[in-house]
Length: 451
Image (cartoon, one colour):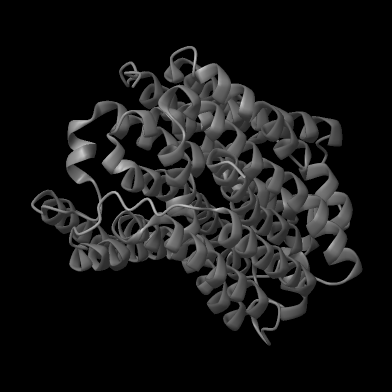
C-alpha cells in the first residue's frame, strides 16, 4: 500500500472512531441517567470528562509526537482509547463511568494530536486541502453513524453495548495502524520536552473549565493566573510545548485557531441539547432520535471534502467565513425552539448547521496547517485538536452553567421541561453570539502563502 493511501486510511479510521463515540454517547445519555438516577449536570459531565481530559493532554502529546515520532504516539493512543472504551462498559455507578471516560480522553488526546500531523507530513501543500477534507469527511461519517448506531444499540442492547462496540472498533484501528502505517515523522527528534509547561497547561485548562462549568470564582481566577504564567513561561522556552511565539507572530495561525475555538464552542453542545430535547420533550425513543440527529453530520460528511477541495483553489478564509455565517444563522433559528416546534423545522435547522460547519472546518484547518513550517506540523496539529477540544469542552461548560442557573441539580422530568427548553434557548443564543464574533476572526486573517 502506498504511503499516502496508508496515511489517509489509518488517519481516517481513527478520525471516524472518536466522533462516533461522542455522538453515540449523546444519544445514550437519557438511558444512562435513568439507570443511575442522575441530574442533568452530572449527565453533562459524562460527556465533558472525556473532552476535558483530551484537551488537557493534546498539546503535550503533540510535542511528544514531534520528538518521539507521530506514529508511536498515534498507535499508543489507539490502545489507551480502546481500553478506556471497554472499561466504560462496566462501571457500577456514574462516578466510575466519568473516571473511565477520562482514560478514554487521554487516549483520544494522543489520536487528536497526531492524525492531522501525519497527513500534513505525507501530503504536499497543493494536495493537503483535499486530504484534510477527506479526513474531515471521515470525522463527520463517524458523527453520522454515531446517532444511528448509538440509537439502535441503546434501544436494543442497552447503553453499555455502545462502549463495547467502540472498543472493538478501536482495536481494529490499532491493527490497521500497526500493519499499514509506515514512517516515524519525528521532525523535532533530540529536542527537549517541556514538562513544566505541560503541567502548567493541563492545570490551567482544568481549573478554567471546571470553574466555569461549576461557576467557581476561585477556580476561574486560579486558572486565569496559570494562563498568564503559562504564556510568559512558554514565550521564554527554547523548545516550548505550545507555540506561544507562533500565535503571537503568525496572524493567520492565531486568528484561524481563534475561529476554530469559537466555532466548536458554539456548535458542539447542539447534539447534546437536541438529544435530550428529542427524547425528553418530544418523547422519541433513542433509535428515532438518532435518525433525526443524523441529518446534521450527513450534510457535514458530504460537503466537508468539497469545501477542502475548494480551499485548495481559492482563499480558505473566504470559504471558512461563509461557513461561519451560515452556522450563525442556524443557531439563531435554534434559539427560537419550543415544545411545539415542528419536526421538519428541527431537521432543517440541523441540516443548515451541518452545511455551515462543513464549509468552515476543512478550509480553516487547511489555513492553520499551511501557515506554519514543516517542523511545527505536530504543534500545529495539536493546536487544531486543542482548539476543537477546548471549544467543545467550553460548549458543554456553558450548557452546564446555564443548567445550574435555570434548572438546578434535578432530573429532567415533565415538570421541568419548561425550564429545560428555556435553558436550551439561552444556550443557543450564547452560541449564536460566539459564532457571530467568529466570522470576524475568520475574515481578519491574511492570505495563505502556498508552499
